Image 1 (spheres, one colour):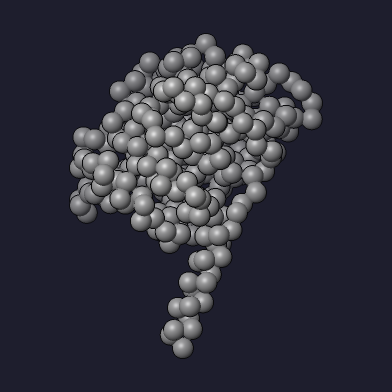
Image 2 (cartoon, one colour; image 1 turned 90 degrees about the horizontal axis):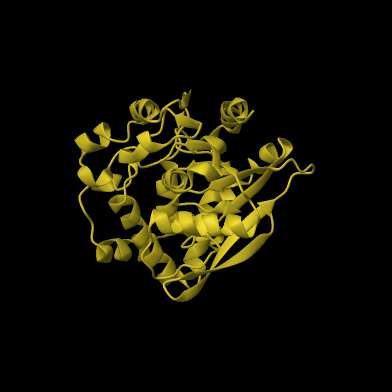
Length: 315
């Protein structure tokens, strides 16, 4: 009986791991030249029914891609926004080259994409790692950014000051051992309570496990972990001079490299209620919206609270 039950679980995981998710809109490719090679960047470009000239750029987190914005697209298009959703180079449907990854590079890639689409100004929304990228993008192109929204961004503290260093070789080996179960276990930490409807976001990440390019993907995953670790933005929040909204789920305790901390460190760091307030103080004139009982991904866990938090700011 136990063997049958175990086999059923394995079969269930196999189905999920091999399932492919459909992006909410057509994907397009944009060609970039990076370190002497041609690299494709995938993106979605969704226009509203009535053109208003308003644009919003959505920047995804490290364990995600453009797919997980699917439920917020109708909200923005109803407000008249053209919605641009890139898969950053190294993620999702974009290429995963073996290059030096930096937030400066990703920001520059994104600016090239927007220039090619004829976009002159935009609202920028970054979630998790996308918040670090949105910060760097805003610092590099301040006149281009009309408003900035940081949704439970990582990088509100400097991880390298308290998370033990891990070599690329160790990170790469860990990424190559990834399974559907390991992805799911990590994503479960994003929510106070796991629900079946969150499984699709694990599927979106786990689609990489079956890619013939998985070694390249695992390598990019390790390199971009180092990018987060080595390239903090926390010391530059006071340089942001555009209208900024911080949306902070109060149940979030995310730390990049949390598995390297002892129990005391796990309790001390990743305190988003405190980190949100500190960041709010650093960004002049910013607005802080605290969402009680919400974890790392407000736009997935409580889309109504997310929309309520952002709608007044956009108007």
